[in-house]
Length: 251
Image 1 (spheres, rainbow, N blue to C red):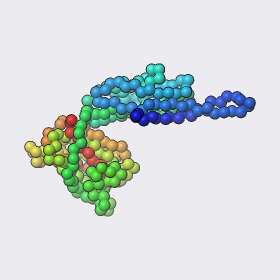
Image 2: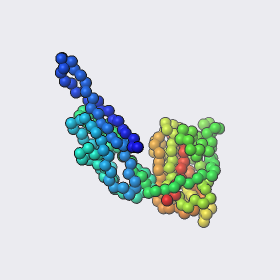
Image 3: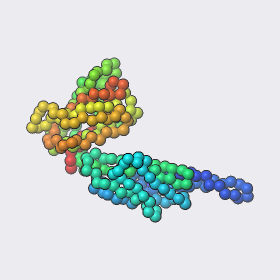
Image 4: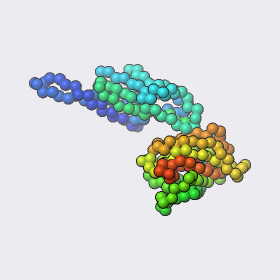
């Protein structure tokens, strides 16, 4: 059963009844909490109900070009370009009823992938009880953190993947939810493979020192990866931390 999103957009509409002013709320009900499209899906209709006599919708970020929205009858119509990346993407839209407004998040999945298993990992620096294993335990509330008492110029994290990993196409870095000390900024990414045991730089990336996940679609598919090495060049407060690190192969 689809989840129902209730966006109560309260607009005070007054009318006279024996000199009493009675507030009447304006309601807006969407059939989906977060409309999501597949990578190759280019349109989606999301039914809604509202008591508002007027309703408008617009992109919150006017620079977004891969997605557009409109209203047709009692449907929110989403149009999207195919997502040719392995990384998912999202944007927010603004829905306005009378004098109130609310936001919806539209998501589009990346090219289908399968999650790889991490066998083991190591870190050049770590804090007791916040070792590197905390970054692949499946718990997004626990996290790895470098040594509290020492700031290094860079930090090295190495993740050893499952023996039969077919390829590596997408890396997802989940920072601490509060974007606290150690949240990644700039990083370099290296990969070793069955054909070459030496680490070769694949790409660099700026995670932005923010508390939102970074989904890093690699510029080329890495076949038969063995291990992935991160050099953390900048981290918030001069440290390094990671709630979860995930690796994906093309499906």
